[in-house]
Image (tube, rainbow, N blue to C red; front, top):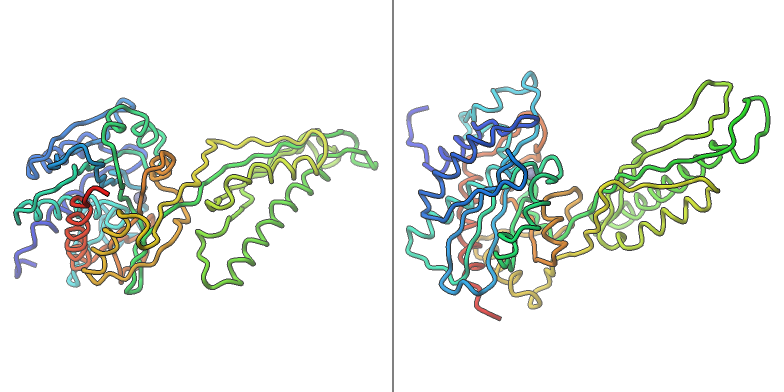
Length: 401
Ligand code: ZN
């Protein structure tokens, strides 16, 4: 397709897709090199912070006219999830563009699109002669798809992050198949909970007291009973989204010796995604269920995080939100405000009390993150740059309040 000259922003995006930052062995070295070139084009300060060796977080900075004011953070992650190439129409790292302008590739939606849209919007803003009151930082972080353990989790604890003095952070959202676009002002917190039940072992022919089976039954009934309740709550109220309720799924069972032996131990694990309004009391709930189940029933919560913080998205109450939503209005973006049902790196940022919004300007696009044949249409991609142009202009020039 040589009929029309490709928009350089699209070419830039496709080149980024071609870098194989795919787990389990992401090529972060090539990615960092690529981003260094981007920073140079943008005339931004560039630094690489390796919280963990081999896991670079790239930081770019455009100093504002009043650098003492709280800054704007534009965050994206550089890694992408694995692919099953046999299921793809095209090589997932070829960034193939078909006759409709659909660009196929791992990361086209999650979330290399956003990383490039920030950069391209900023390039245009600068070219148009715009100045910024506030400093703008861009972070390109590793390992978000592994929960950010070697990435954002460390970065937020570092001096360099604290010194950024962030007023609002922008990060990823979802593609939307309708005209509307979703903006996420909070997120659910994932907990991996394991319950261990201990009891009296013995021969399988008797009524042994204090057995693990009965305790496990109580635990499973309690967790899944709660699950039913939450599912019903979601079904009964069309105003609610998945992010407004807590999901519970039994994912792992362990124990047993022989069919005729009552074991001394059984354990069960649950994948729980807790909505912000439930998070503070959730451990009490688990503790109560364990106590009811009987003696010798204990729980462990792996990587216990408590993200109860949500960003205020009520008009007239948060100047950052007002600036964001005014820009969206100007660009004719219809917003739907939601709690993000899964987990992103913003959990670490929100915990510091920093305003954070998850937003990926992709509408009329099937949600294919982590799926086969992930793609983004170039027109949608380019419109996203226009949208960020207005958003960044508004946010970076938000007057002191
Ligand atoms: Zn992502």
